[in-house]
Image 1 (cartoon, rainbow, N blue to C red):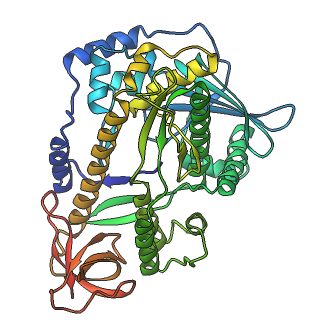
Image 2 (image 1 turned 90 degrees about the vertical axis):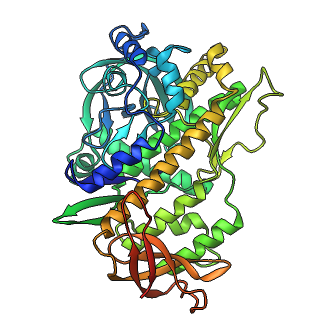
Image 3 (image 1 turned 135 degrees about the vertical axis):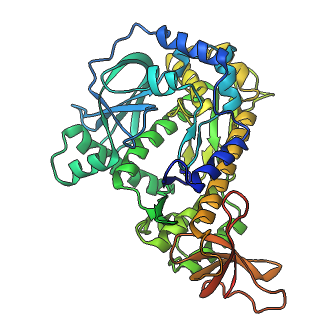
Length: 487
C-alpha cells in the first residue's frame, strides 16, 4: 500500500538536510546498529543457512528505483502451455540470515520497519545484509522464498506453491527503462507479460471493488536560495509491478487462512465521516464525484500528472489509516481466533504483507507461515510464539513510520516557503474546522503545499471548495508547520 514518497535534491550542508538530520535524531531509531548485531550480520553474510533446491536457471529480474540496493523481489513471467500465465516470484529469504532470539533479530524487532526520509533511510537490517548478502542483486546466487503462481487467461490464480530455493537474478531494471521498452515495442516477452498480467489483475481488482492508489512522489529541488516542491506521477509500470506483489499477498493470505494459522493485513471499511470529508476535498479540488459514483471509480479516473488530482490522491491515503494486523492460530483459538472480517477493504480481498522482508519485520514471519502452509506442516514454534506480539509491534512501527512521513512533509513544506514569509499565493480551501469555520486547510496552486489557514474568530467563513488568496505567516523548517492567513 502506498506511502507518501518524497525526494530531495539538495546539498549536504544546506539547511534542509540539517533539519532532516535533527528529525532523524528525534525518531528514537538509532542511525547505527549495535556492535553485537553488526558482528552477527557479518557472520551470517558469510555463512547463511542455505537450501539444497537450485532454481538459479530461472532468468529472474528485478524492477526498482535506479538507486535501490535492498532488492526484496525478483520475477520471471511466462505463458503456460495449457493457457494462462506462470509467475515465478522470488522473495529475499531473510530468515536464512537472522536467527530468532539473537542480536540481529532483537534489533529488527526494535526497528520494525525501514524509515524513509527525503534524503536517506534508517534500515531494518544492517547494510551487509539488507543491501548485500540477502538482497536479490543481479549475478549473485541468493537464498529466496520462490513463489510459483499459475494464472488462468483472465489473470486469476489457480495454483499456488512456495518453497525455499537458491536463485540468481539476471538484471536490475528500473521503472522508466522498462516503461520505455514496453512503449517502444522492444521489450522481451517477460516484460511484455508484466503489462499483460498487470492489466488483467487491475481488471480483476475493479471487478471485486478494490482500488490501488498510485500516489505521486513529491520532489523537492533547490533553486538558488530557495526550494520548489512538485508532484511527479508514477508510471503504468509501477502499477503493473505492484499488482504482482498484491497478487502474492492475496495468495499468501489464502494459504494461511486455509492452514488456520497466520497474520493478515486488515482494514475495515472507512467510516462515513472520513468519506464525507474526502468528498469535500474532491469538491474543493475540482474532482468530479457524483453521489452515485463509487469511490474506486473516481480514483481510477484521476490523472496523477494533474496537480489537483495529485493532491486529491494524497488525501485519499487518509482512508487507509485504520489498517492493522490480525493474527490467528488454530492451535490457540482463544488467544488468536480466526477473524470474522478477513478482507482488506481497499483491496476487497484478504491480504498479507509478505513481499518486503528486507524492509518490514512481519514479512519474515509471514513467509515462514506460507512455507509451512504450502508444505502441509506446522509452522516453526518461534513463528507461532511471535503471533502474541507481532500485531502490536507492527502497529507501533507503522505509527512511527506515519509520524516520520508527516514530519518530513511538514519540514519540507516549511523549507519551500521559509523565505516567503508575508508573500501571498492562490490557494483552494479543501477543508474547514467543524466548530470554527474561519480555520481550515488550503492547498496552494503552486508550489504543491498543503497547510493550515486561520482567520479572525469574527471573520467570514472560509470559502470551502473555492479559490482564495492566502499569506504565509509561519514557515520554519524543523520548528513550525506552514501556517497561512487570509490575504
